[in-house]
Length: 171
Image (cartoon, rainbow, N blue to C red; front, side):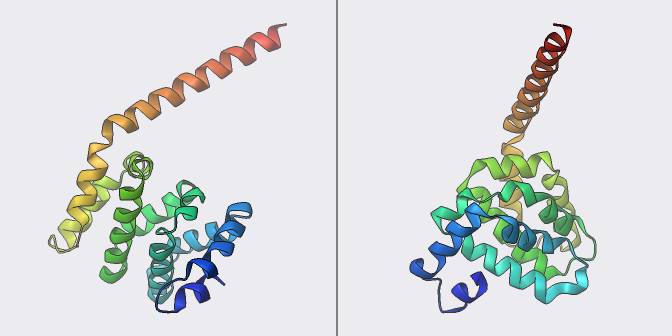
């Protein structure tokens, strides 16, 4: 349904909005769509179709409430694969750049997943000819402090939970 809504010259707000609201309530189809990027490189037509849908999807304000962060590892798998087609890689970089531009949180997640090194390797492999790749790498790098802070906060919160649990068990 989502693909049909986006097939016209441009997605119509009226057609896509009900689908986005449904995906917010039931995100499984969205996650399946995202995870299809973690299929063999021979699935180039599928990868390109998925990335084009995601690129259009991210432009809707309602789409920001979808669980993008839960499927970022599949984007990374596609980015890191030495077999990923150059055209797919280019579309993926454009999509990730758009997503990270909309919310710094996604740049932080990409940082935590090692995107900076993966982007650097892709740039080396393709002789620096990937549009917005250097900008995305810089954006991800600028979030290093935030990523470190998130890791530290997560560690402290988990440590506190473990202490509380230990005290509760002790009573």
